[in-house]
Length: 114
Length: 113
Image 1 (cartoon, rainbow over the protein chains, first blue to last red):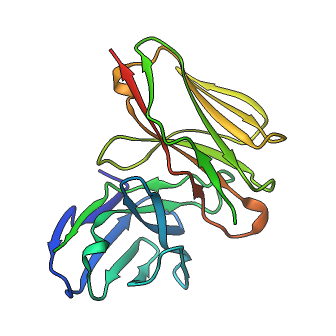
Image 2: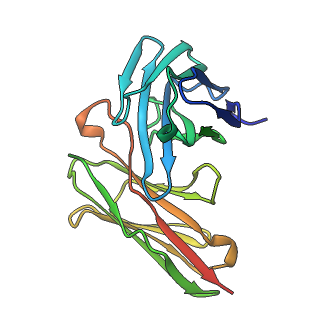
Image 3: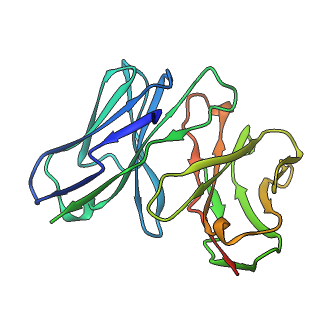
């Protein structure tokens, strides 16, 4: 079973709709992240959470919100989707007690906003 | 601004050759360095990490770190077509407190059979 799961894996939505992307992990890690990836732009950090009560904006948080429902769950919401939010979205986790603090990625959600 | 720079490529090497991927970083407080491989449409997967100056070898992969010159490289020996992917360099800046990894934009490697 995958340690970091994302649902849905693919989503098509229309401009103006609210959608939620979900991430769950069984790794027991305390830190979780949301990234988007666009061709040629690399991974860009949207939001990150270092524990259940800690939420931080990344470099491109406008138009997004997050919820850390439990240590194992971190959801990303697009309040009113727009076409330029079409991208590949990744969730990642890391363990702050590990010196290297490697990030482990989920399989990704491909989002298309029409 | 903490930056991690990589040549976007594509870097083309013949099968069996050594592929050399480079990464430079701006913050001298950087502590840990990671190489991820990402196939098209897939998620990044960790190849290896390094935090001490010098070389670290794992199978066909060798990471090299030079903190004085602020660069980290990844060598892939006996390159195979299956190594064709984008390679992401990431840096952990521990000295600045709670900061997520900073990723480079990646270098696309193409191994020609």
